[in-house]
Image (tube, rainbow, N blue to C red; front, side, top):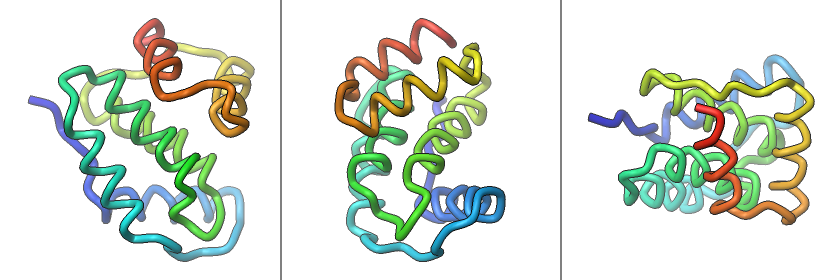
Length: 118
């Protein structure tokens, strides 16, 4: 059984990222958070769900700040809660998530990248 992330868990991960990296607290778009949570549950593929959580946060920007760091942390937390982790160097992680942020890597590409590393 796959464990999915609830909105309060997504907010808690965001708060942890802000505590570590700084930034402005607050949810800017609660509907976007809900949409991300619902969309991630529609897949049987854990890599696709992780990609939707992460890329959804990066693209939809539901928080006032820290969306990139929170998206990456959320995808990793989701995988971790389901007994998996991404095996990648810090450099690979940075390049991949920067590509998500600049739009050159979409959810499908991110899911493929995750799948190859879990």
